[in-house]
Length: 195
Length: 192
Image (cartoon, rainbow over all chains, first blue to last red; front, side, top):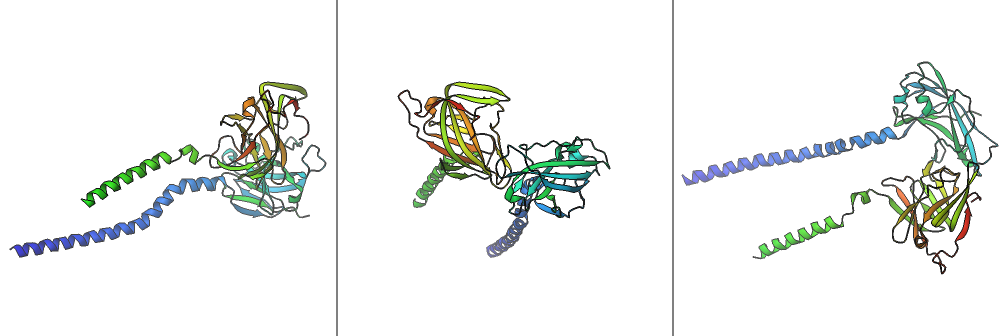
């Protein structure tokens, strides 16, 4: 009787350890799935914010052509230097970038949030618009941020100009780029005018 | 018996370790605060977004400046400390809000706002490839002049960005306790 008892107990223990082993293996496999899932879940917000705040991937636009961006069609119409200005640091050259934007979606205050026009050169340096240089512009010319809140309607053609100050050595390779909140991490990079 | 003693020893060690870690952990604000980049006068200090080189320091009793066509004279019960430096953006346009004069005992004085919006007053906007000379102007008590540190960062309140810390060194003082080189009036309109 006692022998039978011992046997059944050891068989039970064997069965229990088998189930335990099975569950232990399942738990380990679950870690393989859960750990990456936790990393993805916790970093999702930060990655989204990072991608939404930075101009990372360029979409090149050929000179003279327009690109649909932030609900509207953007065309770079002019990129030139302004010479003969006084009171600037030695070696500094003012640069003007002119765009014509045909409004598609008039909800620009949302689509163009964080609108940033900037210049990049061959070595990767970036210039944002300056307040040091102020040149008089025609009344219908806006900057990107003011255009976003101008209340323009679908089909309107907006003239946008941004002014920069860059060193002489960068002039040969600068290109104009535009980023808006609704399109990030993508941004437009315009080819230089053919001279 | 040995097992019991070793368990107690292990427990004591664990408690000591935990206590040590608890007391030595820096405050969260410090962990996520500014990252110092240290240097001295005449050295170019490379912060994350800008570089800075302090050229000289001057002290004066009054400041003279021209604001919107009007001459302004600023007096003080202490001293005006004027730090002349060269600032440059590194890879992208940026700005520097101003600076902090940290006295020998750690007292901090921000760049004076009494200058208002005079030309050349901070914030300083910086463009890559176009270094500019600037003046940081502080109003400090005379006893804060020696062994001070200049602290410069991009933004006034920021985290995990670099902060240039420049040791301004000893300043010779006269019998009256004022810096030996102190002048009566510093003209801020003179070119840097």
